[in-house]
Image: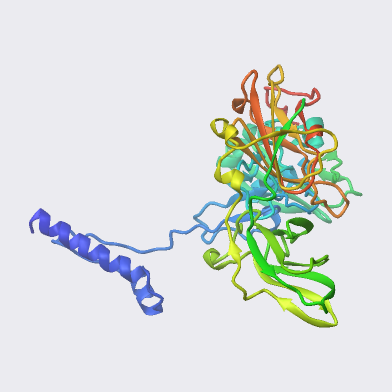
Length: 481
């Protein structure tokens, strides 16, 4: 058979296989597992087998993972969750270094061959890259914070994970070449022993009873469970996300603006005056608002700024997920409500300041900026100032504790969203410091632009440098007992 003809036959066969692999027909799939063809006497055989290796994601895979789907496959922990990503309005999830180290060691003891930390280094969600309700610092409680510093007190004091990594490296020969034996050495006590032919040995001792002493090979040891002046640009009169005009009758007394939204937040205005804001949460994105309002005689305008705070982070059919306004009406005492849900609304996407890109230096003069003082009290406002970079190499963070909700740009680079006013159940903001990489900064003349949606105090914004107290560091591997 000629070469061209052979290639055509191969392509034809692969097309057939490609289409068949998309089928849901069980008999076809069963046939494909042992499908073989012979071409030109070459007896080229295609053997279909299960190439997948099931792995574990979680915090305690040494306890929860049943092992791979074949004894000839590696036992892999593809995501060791060192924490959980933090969301606005939620308390931070802190996982101790001892807990992480224990479960890593237990997974290795049970013949684990691969562990990947998720995450080991905190990230920063610059711009609008964060998913719905996720804070700008991604995985804020991971071992290394977003500035590259050790974040958890346990790491500073004990270096648990670094010591564990060193021990595993020192024991690599029996772990890779030894035979595993598992046996009980007492109530709630287990030993996992790797013995290599030349006598090298590595033992993992598990004691789940902190009140008892663990004894092994005539030795004893106790194992315990741990536990400047600025300027602003006011845009309140230049935007409308949705706008509806109406004229109430004289019987509309004690009017209440009722809004239902599928998420994530909304700022409402009556006749260009702010009346209230509302928002959902990561777990319950939809929300409703009932706001007492005052109406003018004659025509009134209802304006609502609907805000999306990140896209959905997971799930099927993401393209079918909806956010935004669902129902709007004005309820009057003693009369039927004015239902605007199905009315024709004026609609505008985005804000004028963003369309003009006034956070870019070449566009700063496209708007008129005004001086501000301590008496400034405005909503949905752009602020501008300049500053010099702090001296030294320490990481830099912007302290936004005096603001409420919005976005920040430094030298045209967005450092992400802030939402200081969305407190945890304990009444605290989840994040007030926002990372500004040194690569974003110049020695002097840096431009800071802030879009504040609510009513923050820009005069109290400050820059902080991040430093960590001295802690024990070592380059050598820990000594084995």
